[in-house]
Length: 160
View 1 (cartoon, rainbow, N blue to C red):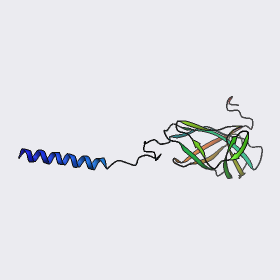
View 2 (cartoon, rainbow, N blue to C red):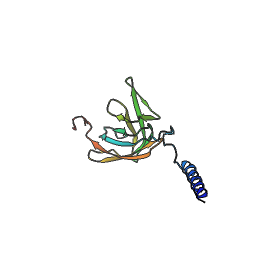
View 3 (cartoon, rainbow, N blue to C red):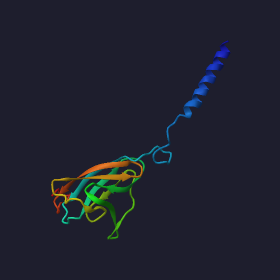
């Protein structure tokens, strides 16, 4: 009787192990099996008060503390007809379809470099107001950001 009980317990433990090994979740959001995912946050967001009634620029920094890269696929805002991301390569500005936010890295939109362009402004943003934007990412989904409108000559390194 003791042998039968031991055999049943061993068989039950083995069956339980087989069942539990099939209960894992998906490999990862990154699809590489490592379990790494992007972990995005946004800082240093601002819009210089536009000098034009129809166009404006926007700047911010996207930080990825996660172990997988993500891609900024589009930007939307109720303040403009369209918002596009522009990259500056070799002194030449061009519209970008997607921009990568590297794992454990950052994507910076700054004056003289990569930036957001707001076209077809619905109202001219004034200093002291905020402009809402939604950043759309391939893996992380949407991230809403409030951009304060700063003076046209604002310099983030000095805060003036």
